[in-house]
Image (cartoon, rainbow, N blue to C red; front, side):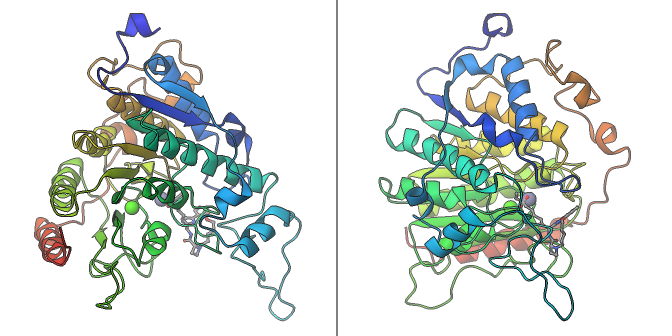
Length: 396
Ligand code: ZLV
Ligand code: CA
Ligand code: ZN
């Protein structure tokens, strides 16, 4: 396969791929939008292109309790490890579910094997971080991670364990400064909050922002970390609130400008990039008009910085498009984006899942009618202006 596709190992650097196929067998419930099976579809397409021959492939073990406890509270972990997916207790008066740690509701249901699922996601992310710090990998990929909403002692938005925070904590044992970038359509609130009080991690999230109608409702332009002068973490949270229908061209302009300025000022020693694919056009929960090319351009931009980097997954609720994006982004990591065919491989299992046989469907193919763009150029300039002023407070 690798020979016929012309895909070879990248020259002068190493890419590793970290996954645990057991993770993919878990189910959140019939109607729940999070489908771990999308990881199977993504991997299947990546392998069909012959990309595994160009990377070091690791089957990762689950993270241990102690590893999870590097971020999460032991009370929360103990509950997560013992709670059974039986009926959730209801409040006697109004019958509302009485949730502990926000577990068991419709966003974060209790399902069979939940604790295993969470520790496997964190295990892959942590393995990726360890291969980076040991310098065995220059880019490490963990598509099963990226669960950016989980808090120290609370589940939130389909996320129970924050594998990203755990992986960044590992990077911080060896690197002075880590830049976290989040292109999921939702605000990366859990990662932002975890590093609110340090100047060793800068977080930047691009997201749909509508405090009343879009989850989680945080991440306004001027939410930039605790304002106190004595807090080293002040000004180290960058937020890029966007509206429905943003296009590749606008996103690319914003991303390059903002991430470029942050890198110049903050001078990170490593990058953690959350590649949530719900920012793609046609996503079941998303609102943007991004195409596979525009989403991938963010990965390409970060790769060109030549810093050690972890690529995480995240959201993504239209599995065929998730698989396309993460396949294209894997090809970018191994520098094969110009070698792979834009026509999906003939022999790909699940080929019928993809509807069109292209890796790059047009907006018309995805949506029929593209979503209306509610991001005037003037607003994008205001955002750039705000971030530029914010960065004046960051010491370089
Ligand atoms: O992609 O959910 O809006 C990383 C990620 O960023 C809500 N949740 C909360 C606030 C009030 N609720 C609504 C409860 C909905 C429960 C089930 C759905 C079921 C079917 C279809 C859509 C949803 C849904 N839930 C859509 N948006 C939500 C958000 C959570 C979004 C999490 C994004 C996670 C993996
Ligand atoms: Ca985001
Ligand atoms: Zn999301």
